[in-house]
Image (cartoon, rainbow, N blue to C red; front, side):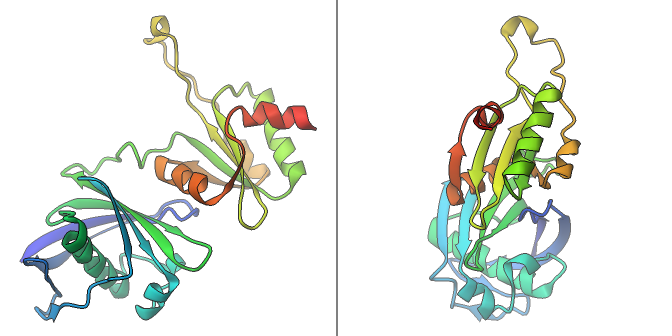
Length: 241
């Protein structure tokens, strides 16, 4: 029986926690077999699959599908047998529908709960390396500010600290301001050898809930929240008040 190692990065805005485990999986021609060898033909017909490329796939699960497995989007944990069973079935269906090969792969699974109680899974093949992929690595900070005053104070402090990175602002479903600050800059070619100094953004915890900005978390915000300022949000907000 082949082994599958999955590293689950539950980055549902709380910060990601990482789990690793080995689970036995046997997969045949479009058929999933569970650990006891019992054939499972039900699959997940209502799950939405979006094959991004050979190494990445987006999977959307509704609240109904989670409820049928007695799992909540916030309660997904690789140490839980129900989660492991759900992931095996979903990945098997992803292979049947999209040809997404996952056997004997190390996978990173980022889980984003949706407002309706469902969730979106972003699955990335890591290959044989356990290092973070570019999509998993943090390049900045996301701050959920409750109210305009907290947002203004955060922007004012960023200006005082000399922040010059990219910034954008969104409005969440529950009315919070979501400020994304990318703590990186593109240096001119003649400065390539100079180390790019990054500003410590930990102070933003004083003004709201703070999480790491990754490609997946930013993509989720862009897709599900209302854009207020896609560029230079910090300067634009300071000019508004």
